[in-house]
Image: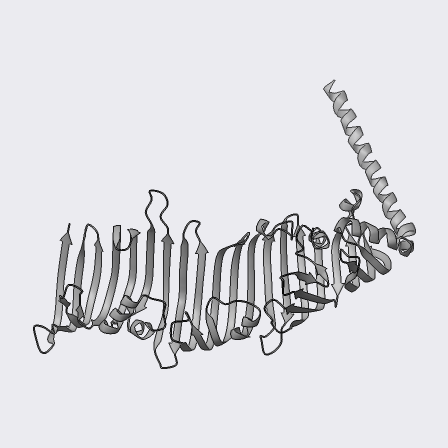
Amino acid sequence: MLITTARWLHRFFVSALILSGLVFAGIVLGLRYWLLPNIADYREIIASSISQAAGQRVTIGMINGGWDGLRPHLNMREVDVYDVAGNPALRLEHIEGTLAWWNLAWGEIRLHSLEIDRPNLALRRTARGEIFVGGVWVNQPGSESGFADWLLRQHRIIVRKATLTWQDELRQAPLLELDQLDLRLENRGKRHRFGLHAVPPPSLALPFDLRGDLKGNDLGDISGWSGTLYARLDYTDISQWRSWMDLPFQLERGKGGVRVWLGLDGRKLKGLTADVQLKNVVARLRPDLQQLDMAVLGGRLSLADLAPGQLFQGSEFSFLLQDGTAFGPSRASLKLVPARGKKPAQGELKVDRLELAPLAVLADYLPVNGEMRAALRQVQPKGALYDLSASWNGSWPELQRYEVKGKFTNLAAGSYALDSGAQLPGFVNLSGHLDFSEKGGALNLNSRKLSLIFPKMFDHALDLDILTAQLGWSK
């Protein structure tokens, strides 16, 4: 019985396979010798099918067919896309498309490959925030982004030598034009990967690259999208971009190379990493601060959303002010987690090397509170910290737990008057390492040519050739 059933199933599947092959061969022969040679007679039917799938009226001026391997290939010219009012909004002079067999079986025209040559694309944002692509209103409330969503259902889209213009009437920005724009878009269900290369105006930047790996299926609902974006500009004038986008601080000048990675989750920024190599940077980090004038700025800066909390990192970060003040290169990270219910706030700081001398110079430029700025001016710290790490639970100054470790070399600081009236001594060339927490700690000193300054006790510095000491305490 089982042997008979197996033989029957084998014959059935073999017969079905042969029949499917004959049907497919019949379709191919029909396309090759009947439909494709007379494809122009079906121009309106094809345009109607694309219009129905895209949700917007599409017309085709001319069409002819051929083959791309075993797939039917269409060559279309004068393709017009109409807006909701029935007016021509976007014209594509030349499109080539290779049909996908599986979607033909389902009765919908989808393309294995769509290639567009030398289109002129005009993007515009009105003073009311309405965005138009070639005359098509893409962010109209309550409307579907039909044609754009249909494009995202195509397997591969290639655009060659396009010209794109962006007119932002809301920002009252000048017209931005990108030439020689090449785009390759690969779609696999909800996953969309693209690469873009374009030539901006020479005063703005050299040719740049933009890449993305995104997930989503509805351009009308950005909150449902996530993924990563990458931009590379080997040379750009960053200040010029202020006309079209907001910068996190006031930037008057800055030229050089920039690479940026963005992690997106809906409308939230999940992560940002920037590699910068800039010269002649003039910036103001806050309106009430002095203008920062840097000859050179370089390194990698990153921000990650830990949900909850944030992680800030800097790698090989350095700068040189026009007055000769130098900082870095240095590597540092700062992790901040807010309080959640009964769990206190948490923080963690790590620094591989920190030069203290530039801090007093930078006090007037950085967004620090007035008390810290005044203390830096009074103490005038110098020297360097190495392998510094600090962690804490709670909010300053009422910390529930804390731990600090680090090495210091050739530290120098002026005497400092506390609010209580007591005065901390100053010192020069203090070296050693420190390890302490809320439970106690240890201080190891190994200094040469040390000077101690007690302004209320001695009228001159107390000089020591060598000072070694080990101190410990506990609570």
